[in-house]
Amino acid sequence: MLMHGQTAPKADARQTPPWWAAAPLADAAAHPEVGLNPAELARAGGYVAGRPRNDFVAGRVLVRVLAADVLNRAMPQGLEMPPVLPGELELTQHCPQCASTSHGNPRLQLPGRGQGFSLSYARTAGWVLLALAPGNDLLGVDMADSSDPAFASGDGELLEDYAFAPAERRHLESLAAPERRNLRARWWALKEAVAKASGDGLAGEDGIPVVAGDRRHRLLGDQGTQTIELDSGTPDTRGNLLPSSLLGSIVWAPGATA
Ligand SMILES: [Zn+2]
Image 1 (cartoon, helix red, strand yellow):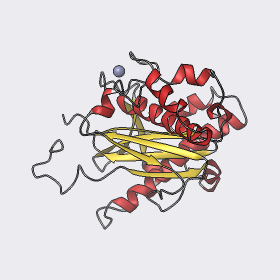
Image 2 (image 1 turned 135 degrees about the vertical axis):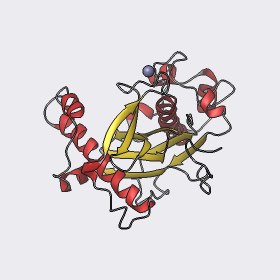
Image 3 (image 1 turned 90 degrees about the vertical axis):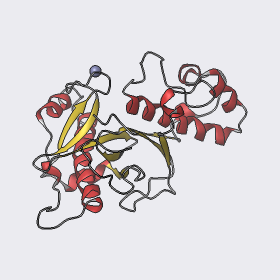
Image 4 (image 1 turned 90 degrees about the horizontal axis):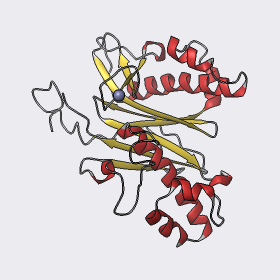
């Protein structure tokens, strides 16, 4: 498939998986020069002062820092292409359903360089995860903390009933407790990643995305969709590892080319 505007296909443009990076929120303290845009500042004001607001701000700072670092590793640099600075990245939005720019999936723009990227990020248990892909690809990431008591075993739990479809529940019930706990966390991250990539959200028409069995979300059944599972044994684009309790998912599919 050719990307929009290309006269000749770039070699393997479609085979290159998204770039991704993860870092602890505490890393944001090393980047006091990176600021948020007005929409983000307004949103920060809606968080309770202290830890919740600080974590939100740190997350958005790190999204820029990590994105710039990842782009600088991925893209050739030279006289015409000086290194990308976190402060020059613009975070915007694009709705895959109605093409609105006032809501929808995050996008990253490099002003003056004529390039846009699909972007997705998540903040869990003091860490930020982000993924980037050139163009208009559908992209969603999330991570879950498998040590969270919400994923622990028990009978008739609320999360189980609310979050998992019958086929998923049957499979989870067949597992020993540690595996069940891990898979609950892994599937939860995958559900969020699908919800983000599709633009449907968790409260979409079909409810929380189903990720296993015959009734799984249409995006997961599409031929072009790739799912990348992240854990403490999967180095990110910068060579860093997630802590052992965090499990992540990246869902990525070719987007509209027009
Ligand atoms: Zn929309």
